[in-house]
Each structure stands twice: as structure tokens, then as C-alpha cells.
Amino acid sequence: MSDSPERVKLSKEEKDRRFQAELMPVLDPLYNFAYRLTLDEDDANDLVQETYLKAYRFFEYFEPGTNAKAWLFRILKNSFINDFRKKSKQPAKVDYSEIEGYYNPDDVEAEGEIGASSSDMRQQSARDLIGDEVASALNSLPVDFRTVIILCDLEGFTYEEMAKVLDIPIGTVRSRLHRARNFLKDKLEKYAQSMGYGNDAIDDETELTEAENN
Image (cartoon, rainbow, N blue to C red; front, side):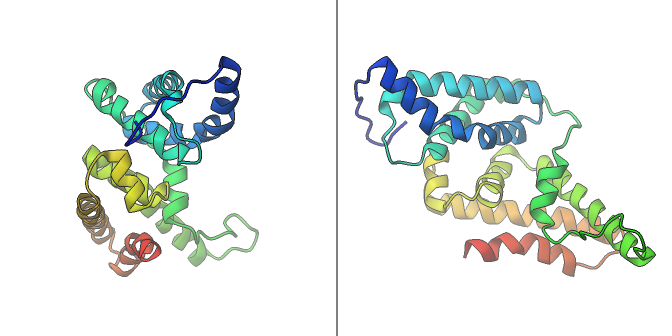
């Protein structure tokens, strides 16, 4: 789990204290990652539980001062591939709110306010539809492409951290992320065209995170 693991013997009290302090704060993003991989609440909870059990078992190999979030995400990713991927269900449940909030940071704050114009309401409705489609498009990507989008654009990992989490070279990370974003953009462009919208808004949405990571 570490690139050069060296087991450090800890007392149970010290192990429990450090485990609580260093790994438990990652619980929420870890669950979000699990849910976006499995698209099922029960599977996500089981995956997180298994991840923490493995992390506790091998906690002596965790290097203090390193990225605890990346370490846990790597364990969870491996558990998903080994144990959950085969049986993972793909229900029609989508975590719209978090993904929409990320891809649509400029949502109209005045929605629902008295005196809002019908034009503003139509614009907001259009953005909501596109936000839902972003979530659906993301969830429809093959899991390897969905994973790099999640790690980079939603969780903010660097390319180096993603390479360690996924056990692939940085060049592969960049290539896979580029292809994933293109797939996502293509899906959203087709949706926008079917709804009678131009491509400018979709380009802004999909290129936002590329600018942030350059």
C-alpha cells in the first residue's frame, strides 16, 4: 500500500488514536467515491466498511505525513476491482446534487425569489437539465474513465496522486483523463443539440476543470 512499506509496531492505544485522527476525517469523500463507483448506497457503504477494515489491519504500513486520502482511495479502488466490480449494480439512482454543484458553480442564486423574470426561470431550467445530463453522462462512462474524472475533477487529486491511487503511469493518467473528458463532452454536445442549444455553454462546462488543472 506504500510504495516502500516498512511496518512500524504500534501499541493498540496509539494505533487507535492515530487511526481516528488521520483516517476517519476522510470518511465523507471516501463514501462519495464509493457511491460514484458503485451507484448503489448499500454497495457504497459495504465498500467503505471493507476499506476501513483493511486500512486498520495494515495501518502500521501507513507513513505518517503522507496523503491519507490518497492511501484510502487506493485501498477502496483495489477493493472495488477485486470484490465489488463484478457484482456492482447500476440502478437508475444518480447523485445529481453534488455533481451538478461542481459543474454548475454559477447557478442562479435568485431562483424562487419574488419578481424573478420568466426569462431567468427558463435559463435556470435549462441549466438544471444540463446539470442532470452531466450526472447521467458521467455515470454512463466506463468505470475506468469515470474514475479519473472523479479523482481529478471532483476530488482534486494531482496527476501524481492519481497515478499512485490507480497504479498506472502519469502518462496513462493524462491520456485516460483526456479521453474521458472528450467522451463526456461528446455526450453533452449531443444532448445540447437535441435540446436546441449551442455548444458554447457545454464547452465552458467541460473545459472549466481543464483550465484549473493546467
